[in-house]
Length: 415
Ligand code: ASP
Image 1 (spheres, rainbow, N blue to C red):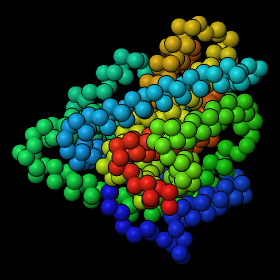
Image 2: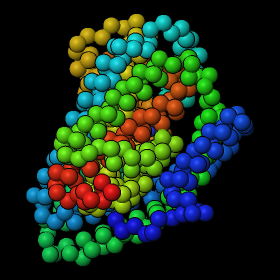
Image 3: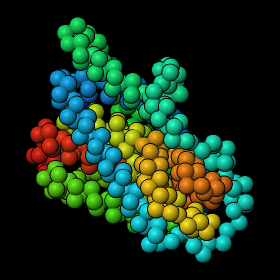
Image 4: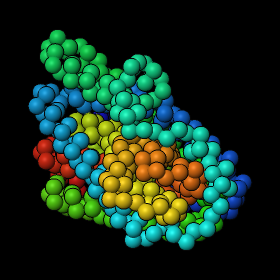
């Protein structure tokens, strides 16, 4: 993706603007408390702008990534590697979550009136639990225009991959279509660059709102759950560094150092989708990842790879089992491994995107879904952490694949 010169304000670079706004947002939230709530609109405007372009972006980035990979052996290799890496890290993340759930016992000794919380559940309670069959059927779109209009990313991805592969299979006959996809992709990337300039304002608005309305009070109630999720996310975070060293044969420190802007973005917006463009930009301009790989792997990752979410779903399942005094059998653990992985793949990369899948997870092991309301108080804060891990995972795997494909610019990475 060609990137225009970095946008600066008063000589401050993007990441500096984002960090300053993050701190200002926290201070404002503390100072204004509930009155900071209206500042959320700054974040909402930004997310709406991102939503406006995210579906065409995912389609065009994937289609142009696949068609520029040229011969399909290349594409098949990268695709298989990518999907295998995303799947195995998700499974591993679920295991980390299940272990942490058993170590921390977050659901024990909590005396909360479940009905009271369920009454506040809103979205969660209204959302029907997703069944596994529904999930699989949902991959194929019976009407692709509807999928575009509704922003059903999994269906758009399946369509984009089939579309790109068909263009490739037609060779010279489809040259004009290929060129058009690339040109459209360039326009949409440029549009996103303009939108991303507003990111610091969004970060400010979201932080002020979150700190102002959630405070630390809620945190105390579910402190153990929070600690369990955060500790597991740290384990996963370190694991990515180890994977970069082992599989990518790279020093992981430049990765951690250069990913700060992207992570701050993920942390403050709680949305993989909203962070995708920043991630693409940073990976290509600072971490030396080739456009081809980043344009294929990152949109795919933002939509299907959510290891932080997988951890969260697994810990919460155990949290509720402990909370309701239900003993889980080994089969239940097997089911959880599957449903938490599927949930992390299916969850939309938006704030609280995984909540609807929590229904599927709990339902699959016979736990009542009413308790989801209990989580909503802390969901935003945990969402920040898990989204950061989700995005870190996308970037780490993209980097590893780029390194193993020998398309990675090591000099730029280490600079
Ligand atoms: N907010 C998460 C993301 O965008 C999804 C979730 O776990 O709710 O990555």
